Image: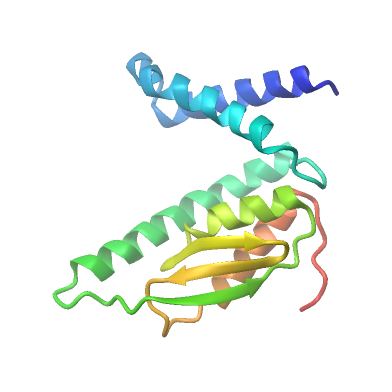
Length: 161
């Protein structure tokens, strides 16, 4: 598959996703078009990810997980900040991912910020550095679930821990 063809497919997919997110509002393209161009330009500028491309069916199956975790993460932050005594005890943690492809690792790192109380601070090889809103809460379970969901997107089989 040629690079131009892949770029066209990616552009159509991203445009469709934007159209869904914006409810088809034509005025949203004032923001959506520059974002779309930027989203297509960045990967070309940064270089290619190694490993398999994501499976379309895998991405479609990932979407409900993505939406649910986005809502859970947003509610968690809102509860922490709006509480009479904010529950914020920041800290750092490290997580070693079992994902092999760099594309899978990047998607994993980007999506970690959806999980309640976590933010990806750095990704180097298989080691992800995390910023935690509450260092007393163990993010391991959520990270395992996310890692498995991303593995399915890229058709990877995770080795045992």
